Image 1 (cartoon, rainbow, N blue to C red):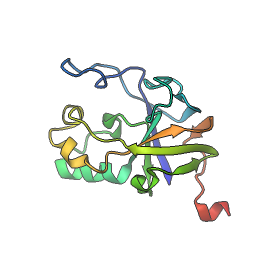
Image 2: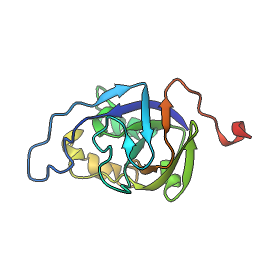
Image 3: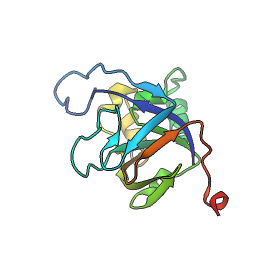
Image 4: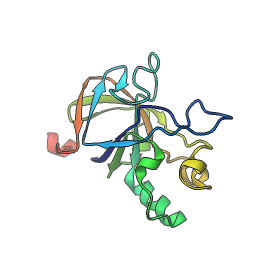
Length: 161
């Protein structure tokens, strides 16, 4: 797995806004994130949201984003629009559901798909929710604390041995 982008937002634009307009909290791209076990990512909207929250951190595959851009022809959009924390490459994120995994010495547990909701059609383009069903990313719990950095090399299982 390669890490390509980290995104944080201090507030919710869609979560908890059912029946109301979307919020206007910007998504900020950073080069490093601080993962706190059992709480989430420091500075993100879901940090310390509630005990044992399944979405303390979210991952999204860049390959799916490339397919999304091609499907809708919107080449000027960013993966930040999807409001996931970590954009990855070279990993089928669905294989991590129900599994513990490690990135840069930090342990995670993949809880479930980060299922797309109806807001995706507003956040990106109409049709996005349906397009992303079954590949909306991964929700995970943070099991150990530490920093993830875009500058650090991510080792494969073979490289760690």
